[in-house]
Image 1: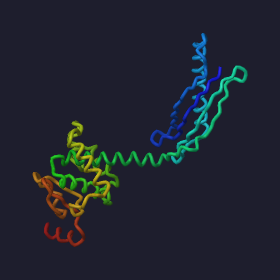
Image 2: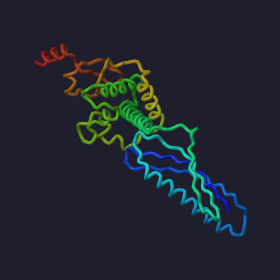
Image 3: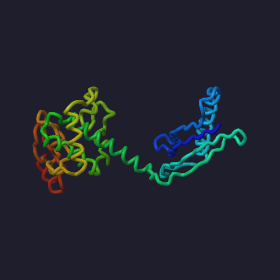
Image 4: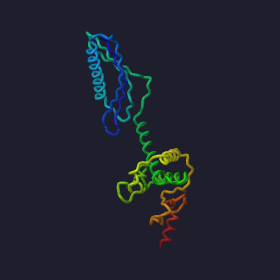
Length: 252
């Protein structure tokens, strides 16, 4: 009996778990006739599949992978001969482009940043106009670019979320997220997030890093410069040196 097993192998190292990851896809081509010994042939086919996977795992274990190692694509063929036994041949597939793990990590990070921004827009401003939602997105992005805050969108949005009070965005610690985002409001929030992250939005808050609703008058707004009101939100930015002096004189 002659049996050929062709396997496409993708090898990489998981950046999160720190363990080697092996994904193998096998296509079995059986060049056999429908003989009475079919059950025995099926057993032999199973044995050869196991042999192929054991070989791939061995290759993975003896070749350390780093986060910079591209995926490796290869073809493996097993020939079964009554005299010679199983022979495994490896052939590289040069026509398949390599995928860099760093690029995959960047894509995952971008997806997380997009979701965090969309969540802020949805929970903080889903009842606002498009301008009001863009303004909230702008504040989040402005903070991520300011040295006083985390340098990622998710870091900004969820800063202080582990505390019952003191979170920077109320929805992250008041139980609002118990109800998952849904419907047209969620779809719109994601679209606004995409628009803002791609840089298509025209600045509307004059570099604002803070806002609150018109229903409250928090103590911290006395130390900031009001920029404008959009919908039900009032926006503020940090003062420059001369403005800080004026604010201090006003407080005195």
